[in-house]
Image (tube, rainbow over all chains, first blue to last red; front, top):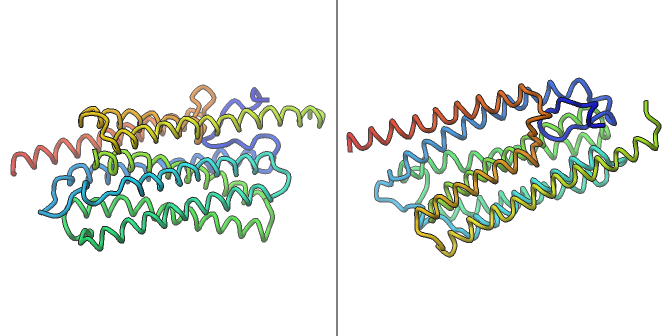
Length: 208
Length: 111
C-alpha cells in the first residue's frame, strides 16, 4: 500500500481511504508549511533578540529570580502530552468510522492546551507582581515579546480547534474539516517544537 | 480497486504502524524532557556541562518531533518540503548567529 503513495506531505497522510482530500491536501499543506517556516523565522529572531538582551537588566531581576522550574515543567508536560493526544486525534480521523473518538481526543488536546495557558498566564501575573513587567528592562522586554507570542499561538490553536468542532457538529467530518485538521495538526506540533526551544534555552538555560 | 477485506487488513497494519510512530515520538520525548529538567533541578553538572546537556537534549527532541509527530521522513518526503526546511534552517542560522555576533561585538566595543 505504501508503494502507491511515494511522496508524502508533512504530517499524517490520509491516503486512499479519503479520496475527497486527495490531490488537494499536498498543495494546501505545502502552503501551510511555508507559513510555519516563516513563523519559525519570527521566533528565531526573537530568540536572537532575547540572547542579546539577556544581560541588559538595568538593575532589575534576572532569570534565576523570576523563573519557576516546577511550573515550567508542568507546562512542558501538558504541551507535550497535547501533541500526543493530537496525534491520536489524527489517527481517529484517518481510521475512525464515527466522529466520537476524534472529538474526545480533540477535547483532551484542548484541555491540555488550556492547562498550559492557565499556568503560563499565572507565571506572567506572578512576574508582573514582582515588578518584572516588559517595561522593567531590555531583558524583560525581549522575554515578553517572545514567550507570550508563543502563548498567543497556542490560544489561536485552541480557538481554531473550537471552530473545527463547531464545523463537525454542523456539517459532519467533511472534506473541509479533514483538510483543516491536517493543517491544525502541523500548527500544533510546530508550536510544541517552539516550546522545546523556549523551555530549554529560556527556562532551563536561565536557571542552570 | 482491491477487495474490501483486503483493504481492511492493510488498514489495520497501517494503523498499527502509525500508532507506533506516535508512541515512539512520545516515548522518546519524555526522557529527553525529564533529563534536562532533572539535571537543572538538582544542578547535577558544572554550568558548562549543563548548557551542553540542555542543548543536546533540545536538538534530539526537535529531531524526534520532526520525525514522529510531523512525519518528516526524508526518503519518502516530497522534496519541496525538505528544501524549504533546509532553506529556513539556513536563514535561521545566518540571522541568529549574525545578530548575536554583531550585537555582542557592538556591546563589547561600546560598553
